[in-house]
Amino acid sequence: MPLELLESPDLDANKREGLWTLNFGPQHPATHTTLRLVLQLDGEIVVDAEPDIGFLHSGFEKLGEVLDFNQYVTIVDRMNYISPLANEIAWHHAVEKLLGIELTPRCIYIRTIFAELMRMHDHLLCLGACVLDLGGATAFMYALNARETIYEICERASGQRFHTSYTRVGGLLYDVTDDWVNMVRDFVRNFPKVYRDFSGLVMKNRIFVERTRDVGVLSREEAIAGGATGPIARASGVTRDLRRDEPYLAYDDFDFDVCASQGGDCYARFQVRMMEMLESVKIIQQAIDKLPKGPIFATDTGKTGMPDKTEVYRSIEGLIHHFESIMPNRQMQAPKESIYAATESPNGELGYYIVGDGSFRAYRARTRPPSLLHFALFPKLIRGCMLSDVVAVLGSINIIAAELDR
Amino acid sequence: MPNESTNSATGEIEAVQTRLAELLPWVALDWSQFRNQTRVICPAGDLLKCLIAFKAVGFDQLTDLTAVDLLEYGNVNDRFEVVYCLLNVDTGLRLIAKIYLNEPNLTIPSATSVWFGADWLEREVYDMYGILFTGHPNFKRLLLPQEFQSFPLRKDYPVKGRGERHNFPVITRAES
Image 1 (tube, each protein chain N blue to C red):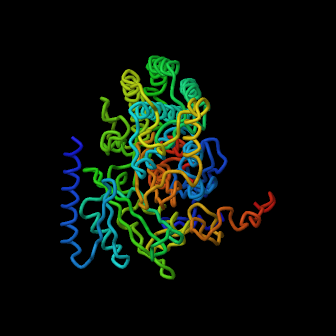
Image 2 (image 1 turned 90 degrees about the vertical axis):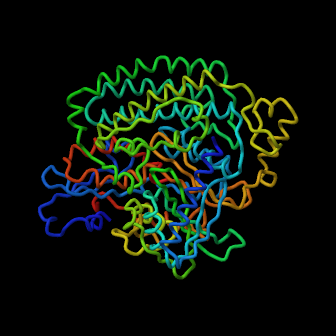
């Protein structure tokens, strides 16, 4: 199998002589998960790179055709597992758009807060790991320490630290408590200090700046035609953010800026992610202050969404309602239509193309993973760079193999 | 506010429709709407011309490319649907273009010459559905092993597989 990967059409046959082939991954500390790159080296310069993916392919999209809209949420949060709730929100955003469900204000606000917490969660790991790969272990620890608090916030709301499976069609698994609100407030209040520590260690560090500036440059045109979205496109000057351009959840109510840069290099991507964390803090502060009271489930009809868990355990009506929404022959029916709906996930545009066939299951549940399109750009980014830049570029585009391979 | 934005979006779609009618006067495009999303069905024979025209009217990003196997969908005559999700990055206008394909002719032109981001997306569609794209620079399976025989997202492929895993070649340390 490795040999045929060397037959890259971009590589001129005359030039191939004297080149050295390096197999990078699938097991390598800097790939974080299982990615494989076949690099063509001329001395220390990377002439070409061919990614070989699929090591984590586990047939998620096939499972999406078997599990119903509520069950599949346990699979989607295993896609981008460093920001699981962002996937759940994106999945149910698409399902609710297909079913035409209007969420309650409280549910929208809680989801917005979680979406922004997940953005910080994802960015913290991405930035920390990128610095770690470039040799700075301290900043990574600061980042992971802050992430720990987010895990606790998730645990308090859903009972699970990691794979929360917290959203449901038309609502959430549990309502949040005042305790949770205070935890989020504390986290947001303490975050600027973490940010100062982290950016003080990294942003002006000469070693870091020299290893990331003008490395892996992506131009605006390449970003658009190549399908780059999210922080990677914004670092190349594409000022597009679905939160502002196609407002979903409660983003219309808040005042925040879209962060972008012109550089297009690893440093610019790093900067954009750093700035976005501060914008997330702004959004969470506004959302937690305005958090509305009321039900978390859209309950205009008996069949929309699942009932509150306390109701299920303490009242016969709640139990019947739960039963009605769980039994396959009594569930809601999706229209025989298809829909593409996307959210601005931490990594870029996370979209779902769902085809409904009149049941409560997706006939086709296509994920549009940002990692897939970003990793496809990798050979373009790395050509002409040094071997040691591979980890810098990989770290800056934040490839999550579980989402990439699904 | 919401009314204004929908009105302007409708206006933009109408402008796109008029320009496409000028660019491709001989192609019959079938337009429809669902929850404020515009879909268009293109004839499979004119796919590449349609895609080039879509890019010419401003859809400069191919957001997603995927396929659906309609085998068990009911009330449809076609087997496969190939879906192109397009986006105009400056105006934020989206368009979903679809074509229908039937066996045995599952070959369509590649969109890589229009948007190079189609590269891996097309390889994935081939990997999962067996739809062939001509003119692709590096056409082979993306996720599954190259020697894999089936196309697993087709509806006639069982969820538990056909036992391919039992035959996976085991490479010993000496051979690797």
